[in-house]
Image (cartoon, rainbow, N blue to C red):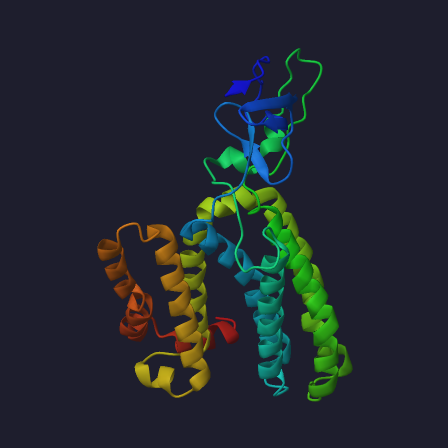
Length: 311
């Protein structure tokens, strides 16, 4: 195979784009930024991203997809409370919005029209921040080689958030106006207003901390699920199994947290060795059982009553 000889590329992510190929002859352009959907190989040539995401990549995308859904549910519950029976319908609508946004995002991603994506492997943390590795050969001129080396794990999240926001603005106001009769006019749309705040925050979070979240999200899931479960059970004054079983809503919250625990454990283990990693899922009920066994020593109801009395 004949390849044109050119000076080597400087920088970690600069590469040469294929201009012409005829049989065994390949002609590459000057060293620079790779086109979207490509990244440099070890020889500094831009190569298309043709691999499929690993299980860990899908789990990361699932985590980023769950964030707006969980926040939707939280604010719907927060502003609905016991004033209206419409919370359930709003929860279902939020789930429908996020599910449809995820499906549409996959369909418009490469390859278009199918529910899977092609990607490049994440090799190291710097792959998420290529803008920090633009070389300056003469310390004066900067060669801009910023591109999405982790294609499409970085930009696909922004596309998903955009579709979530559009679907929410199209569906939720109509639903809330029709069924949220138990709420005052000023309270009906507060969950929607909250989304208009947290979507920009999530976007900035992905833009700045996407690489850090990629490596830390399993531990974030475990810590947050443990903390929120303990707070919910103490706020609901659950001190034994009977208190837990007396309401279906409490069981739904418990099972939801167990699913998050399992998700975090699978993300950490990556299920590389199935026979060794699957038994770890037996640890999922442990936090709830530990809380129930030790609640009689801490007496959450007494602590809450003293806090309400100002002691």
